[in-house]
Image (cartoon, rainbow, N blue to C red; front, top):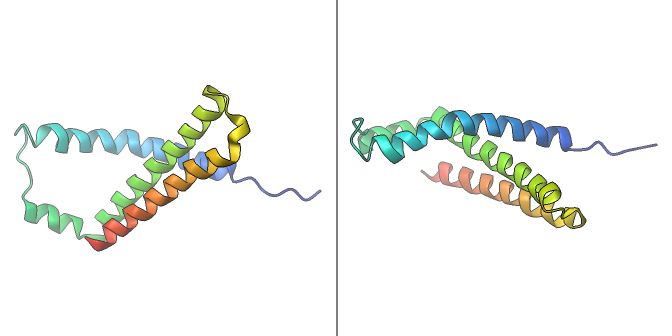
Length: 117
């Protein structure tokens, strides 16, 4: 019996790593750029400093990783919310295509934006 290997373990890996990255990195970024800098609780970085940091390839790779993993975390969580929460298992193929296709599209857009900066 030749069974095709399932991509499910890979998707669960993306889900768990995306959840961890989102839980560790996004609250810090939201606090800094959404609260601390606008309210002058911390001295905001200058435009030139942020520009220099963003042009570092390691920074771009980290931002790309955060975006890609967070998108795949969302896709997997949303897919299972639709499957189990709303009991839409009969629409499995369109849900998978829309969820993971959206994550792939968002990842490609993030890569394109980071490469053009």
